[in-house]
View 1 (tube, helix red, strand yellow):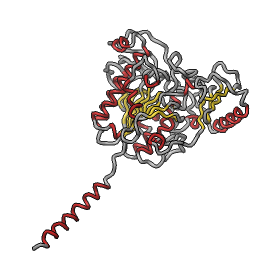
View 2: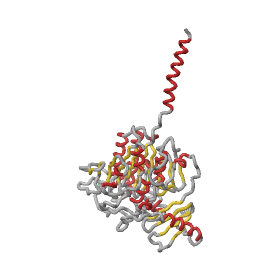
View 3: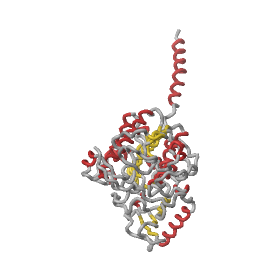
View 4: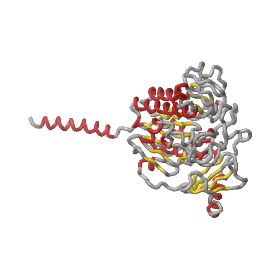
Amino acid sequence: MKPVPLLLAAIAFLVVVPIKAAEDQAPTRKPNVVVILSDDAGYHEFSCQGNANIPTPRIDSIAKAGVRFTQAYVSGTVCSPSRAGLLSGRYQQRFGHELNIPPAYSETNGLPLTETLLPRVLKDAGYRTIALGKWHLGYAPKFHPMERGFTDYYGFLQGSRSYWPLAKPGRLNCLMLDREPVEKESFEYMTDHLAEKAAEYMGRHKDHPFFIYLAFNATHGPLHATEADLAKAGGNKVKAMTIALDRAVGIVLDALETQGLTKDTLVFFLNDNGGASGRNNKPLRGHKGSSWEGGIRVPFLVQWPGTIPSAQVKSEPVIALDIFPTALAAAGIGKSPGKPLDGIDLLPLMTGKTENPTPRTLYWKTGSPWAVRDGDLKLVGGNPGQAPGEAKLFDLSQDIGETQDLAKERPDEVKRLQALYQNWAATHQPTPWGRGAKANDDPKPRKRKPKP
């Protein structure tokens, strides 16, 4: 009767092996993607950027868990164009979104419907997608976030609004849940509120891959801060608002940890443009609206624990346009079905698969201010204080503050960079709302007693 055990063993082998093979071939969960965008913050207003007076431990933790890029840029010098570039993965000048959308309702002013946005591609790949906070990419229904690829929306359409609940909000600055205005605004402080909504969303959709675009209005004006944060900040409103922003980022990171999603989530943190006038942009020259480094270079941090090694500091130039292709690569999506992207996949650089990425040229233009960077050389023109037609040349590897103009010493490089810029500018489309649009969308300051 010895053959019986052998027969049973054979049957067991046939049953177990296919099951194990099926387990080995089980599909890997697609990673979540979270983009956290701050607004108008200065380059030197986070402790990970060297500011010892403003503690931002939760924002800093993203750099400790992953990568901090020291030469990171956005494609626009002001709010709306920068967002258009980030979400489209394309230079926004290519589709006529060079200037801020005016703060008035319009059926025509908005990110053109011809552009395919990142949330649309991720949604089509099975992701749940939500935009939270500031939109500023068009006010008419056809430009609404849920018409651009987001399955969900909670935020406000305009470029700025109060951090306190509004008793009688307007059409464009009211809080909206999906497509409808919130009947009665009820929250303590906008920055915390948006983070809490993001955390709730993670809890509801933890079993499904999601894309969260969390666009804080902090620390954009108006300068509203709670009494508690003002006390911590010694009465400095910008510092108080930055402390609140850091706390809000912590709410998001804690929610990922609580839901067991930290290792399954690719997180980006960056600012939407250079710090507004009066902000701390050290050691950079200029501010929001200019094409000096202070108008375009931003804090840029990325984490994906278990995939991206921790505590990296990278000096390679990167730009917000890179978020789109990087997110697609992380999600296993070959390419966007839309028009060709201008960004590159940063995963090989962040994971160490490549140490020497292919050099590339970066460009900027917002009205008159323009710039082009190729290697370490940057050519700048059109800023206030520059003569018409004047172009200044800087070697950023030696002069991050753009203090030593090399144009007269290196005229051949000036001509070369001018030619690169002109070839790029030839691809631009006119901005329909150019007349009357402003480079700076800061609201008029209002005096109001801080709330507890």
